[in-house]
Image (tube, rainbow, N blue to C red; front, side, top):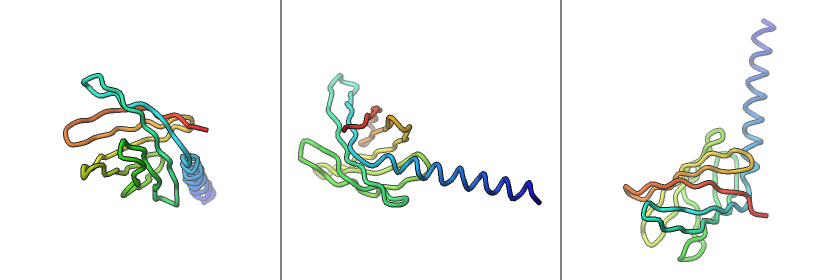
Length: 118
């Protein structure tokens, strides 16, 4: 009986620690997107966490665009940004001091590492 209570308590602690960690994703993050053709594009995101929802903005050549359909599961998240009618899907993982993000638009896929901006 004691073993079951201890295991349950440890699992709950792990859950709350993971949830608290993803809260640190709040704020501005920058990186560079490199395409297969060798082009480079600056990335700037302003993430806002509300429970298991991710909102905020992404800076694009068309200006700041809203983050849509943002969802958080553990330390991973997904969202999309619509630019000029094209949906750009993002799938990322939060590592504490950095964020790895896979960006896909149709068949084109790229990966970038984001760093926190003060």
